[in-house]
Amino acid sequence: MLPPGVVSLRAYDVVGDPGVHTGMPSTSLTLILSVDEPLQVGWAGRPATRTSHWGGLAGLHDLPAQIHHGGRQRGVQVSLSVAGARALLGLPASALAGVVADAADVDPVLRELPARLAEAAPQRWESLVADALLAALASRAGAGAAVPRAEVGHAFRCLAAGMAVADVADEVGYSRRHLTALVRAEAGVSPKTYARLARFERSHALVKRGVRLAEVAARCGYTDQSHLARDWRDLAGCSPRRWLSREFPFVLAAGGAGE
Image 1 (cartoon, rainbow, N blue to C red):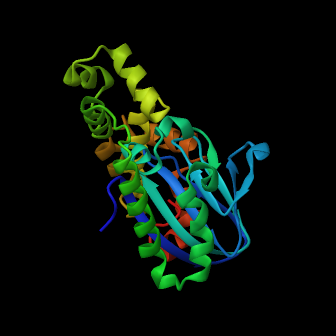
Image 2: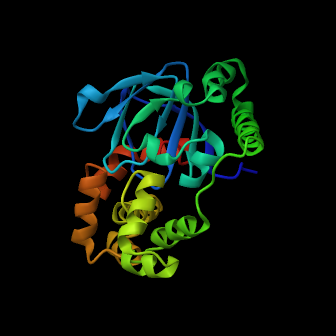
Image 3: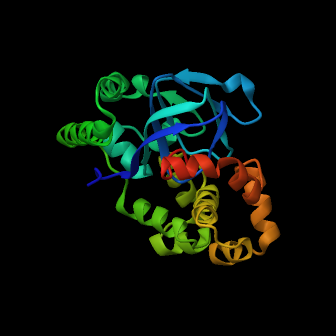
């Protein structure tokens, strides 16, 4: 069972040629705890942003990350919801928006995890990380950690479901301007960007399953397949077909890790 606020938690062990793996934008924060070699990651097209971490924590972003690797990648990847950032890390997701932070600088619990993973058997990695996050959750709850307003959480769910921003504002009883301020304060992106990330995330899941692109576009709310392709070029740096040909072996071997 995953700790509250954790969208997914997966160990991965992938062997292949050295290269670059794409970290896709989504509505979740991404924590990668690396084993064997530190994570080398930066934003696509911005080589000066490349940094090295045994534990890397990325906030919401609207451009692809580039993960440079030497051929073998082992570790654990965790996806955290926006609400999970507060519950588990004690800070709003907005504090990490558009950046890849060193996990050791964010929380003492995360600082210890890479070394503990290196000493543990791979079959224990997922439970080890889950237990550490549960302990962090209990600690935050005991300290009375702040939680987002209920109506803000509802707004995020509505945006993720594809509701228009104006309709979401009406749903939660806020002006559009006030909703924008609250969402940006919590997530670090505007409601429109969050909704776009959610739509892209849905399309990404369908593309991985091999659904035809015209059907993906229709099911995810794009006006047509060209609209889908433009969004992928902006957010993934390539077309869906190009992403599949380049990334599918990794996604298949990792069971979804590194999404």
